[in-house]
Image (cartoon, rainbow, N blue to C red; front, side):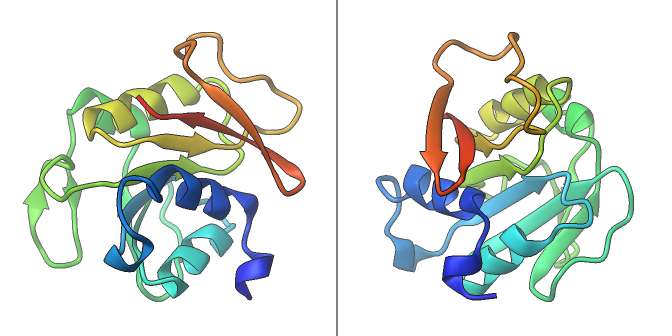
Length: 157
């Protein structure tokens, strides 16, 4: 996969983070619900960033991606922590998380993803299932951006 083939969510993550941290610094991102589509995680790792992928189901992830079987609702509520491959079991707020993102995030999970991103003090970027509108439970500060052929939603606060 070349950078030009990367899913639009990768560009959205870069847009959100560019003002905060120089690209060369390397970001730590969390992908909510990686599922069977690891292209965004792979593109971010290939660009030199750390990616932690979470899903409620065990998933194969690309080399360089850290996987944790977790439910974003539990992470949002702080009832579980994320164990890294280094063996450190710490609250997610301990390792700095620069951005949270998700592809095809169902409306019923969007509020939990927003709470999780807020809990770790990171922006959230996501795409919907396409036929859904964003959850009405999300804050009014939610931004809609057209990136490539997709609509990406950004919650920066």
